[in-house]
Image (spheres, rainbow, N blue to C red):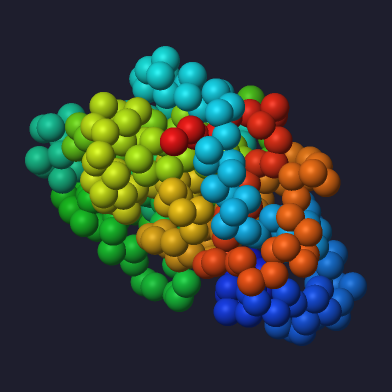
Length: 306
């Protein structure tokens, strides 16, 4: 079992036993590790302790961050959606395929693809000379990622797991000054939504309604949700940073546990001031679907405002 699979088991356990406020020792049993080994694994993988993680998993806390009037995200969205977005220390540049390219299904385009391990389990990655065009996660072993075939049905597909592992290292490895190009098939509306998602800073959250307003379609939260669900490049286009106004983390194409896991890792660079972290007694009974792990300090960056 990979490190991510052990963490995912713990996240599922916390969701199912949120009212019991499980101890670190109980989490370790679920992960199949000693308490000390589990603590080290979690800290190495997530960058925070299990206790810090558990304390911040409250719907009320997530809702308070969605209501926070901090304006880094608002300023980014309101300034326009054509610029590059930030993910970790990456600069992600998105290019949408032309209508003609959409219609042709990638005819004449050579796409290299392969499977690789990642911090969030097995993934498949596809790319062509214009950028990464496919990134998906898989809970079970598959021979071929069907979503890649649907999006690039006429392309020439060449498999290379070794090259995919190199691509994964560039996407998931910490570093600075890196730029990644993303090339996607998208409708005009999808393109606008995905560009808006790229403006959500690491460690921040936005609601579906806030994204809908940002792209000029107030009230189209459901359409924004559909666009998020159609995202062909997981993680790089960060649809995992969009949650419901209720503060509940649900409805992620690649699984709720994976969405929570991504938010955990993205929060690791930020402090957890005592006045913003719910105490274990207050948190008991308030975990829902893993709950989002969100940026604790408004002064450190922007949170979407309802």
